[in-house]
Image (cartoon, rainbow, N blue to C red):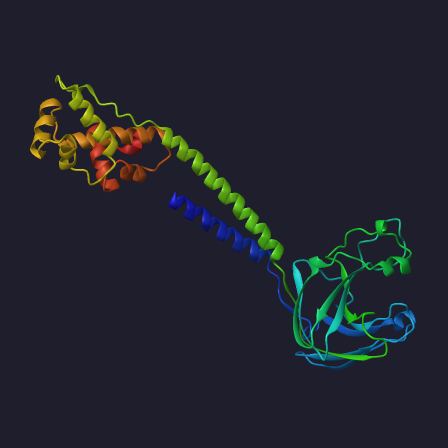
Length: 358
């Protein structure tokens, strides 16, 4: 079983590595990437009065501030990320890693705008369903890991503002994202300026779902392997290794008990590679030299020859009724090596074990 288990484990490791390499995502440093733009935005787009301003930006950090003002029922201001060529981009198997510094505890809202898919055919307005999450950042530096598969809710006000029912929204298409927004939401105090410093803003591979699937796959494969092995083991265990001695082994003596004792002892102990005549002598409670005399008289063999014949009879049963390899059978029947087993088998059966098995 050990060899087969190693093969299965190696197979699972190689399969997992191949799948991981297939799904592996390149890390995108948004702060440094020319393919992505980071822009300020606010409710001024909707005739509100809030403001957002980019203070500084390098490939290593950016600083922006925002201020919510009265005007809209739900004021907002912050930054948004989009492709420089205005193309849709995919967030499948990605998560967002942010290193952000704030001067006090804040509520940080994030939205994903799904521009291409998500609206039912009955809706013709050019609106973008948005998926909304809230994160709490403490005073000082914060490291956030934001998996995009956690975005599954649309705020209630969005349905009201766009006159759309919840039933009109399909599940969002993670392959067609227009914007990612990070901003101050109505949880902020109106009229109070907030400043944020971001030192890391990267899209990195999110393999949590993949690892879960691989774990389930590995569990199923190992369960099947162990189940099949258990079935075969039980089948092999049921094989009755009742040694059928030839007529030459028949004791021509009135002492049937002696015959039965010798048969029982050797049938039960032939798999012990260290079995010796002294062990049988102790079992029969006779001197060791008597063992040779008794076997010579009744079966015409030495102890070693008789033991080898018994082992080969057992091996023949294993070869015909089990799935063990020849090497495994050699050790199971008391031989010290497959080579000695092959030699003795050929001497007694006049065939190699492999020929006999087939």
